[in-house]
Amino acid sequence: MKQTHRPPRSIYPAQNRHMRRRTRVLAGLVAVLCFGGLLARLFTLQILDPSGYANRAAAQQLRDTTLPAARGEIYSADGVTLAASKTCWTIRASPRELADELVQPAAKALSEILDIDYDATLQKLSKRTSNDCLLSRRVDADLADAVRAWCAQNNAQGIQILQDTKRVYPQGNFMGCLLGFTDVDNQGLWGLELQYDAQLTGRNGTILTAKNAWGYDMPTITAPCRMPCREMISP
Image (cartoon, rainbow, N blue to C red; front, top):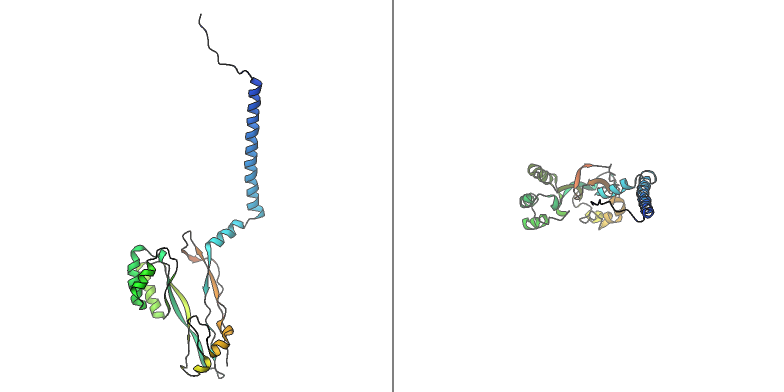
């Protein structure tokens, strides 16, 4: 006689139904917790702290760059300029922004234009992880224009031409012992330059620039700058 095979029946059907019910309830609780946590996070970001991530992004992307203030002028009692500040430019570089194939040509060209040591310049530009190095301080407009022209012609990125000032005395050595002099950072060291240093130094300005994920400057200014200011004195 042929026997038919039937699927085995559960010995505890009530227990199986109970386990399925518990599984559904547990899955529902997990879903509620997940969506509840997500909704709570969205409520925090959009209602309680809507500008939090915007502020964090701005803090990561924006960098302050100092705009040095020109040192104040010194005049004689009859209005003759005895000490003044002349515009000049400081040449710096960000080696990691400079293309590898331009490192040696840039070192050669800049050393010739700025009359600086080639080996030292090549060593500075070869530090591929460096974000800033000084090449030459306070060069005149002709040299700054020559550097700018070479960078434009060779599409060289990472060479920075920063406006600066230097101290000049239009009357030469006249009253030099009274006027005094300044150091390389335009700080007074002697005479009236030292006595009125706080007033003559002025207040530096700032400019906000945006950085990308690699720390390179973005091509646009993202916020208005605060311009430097200075004072003048008359002995």
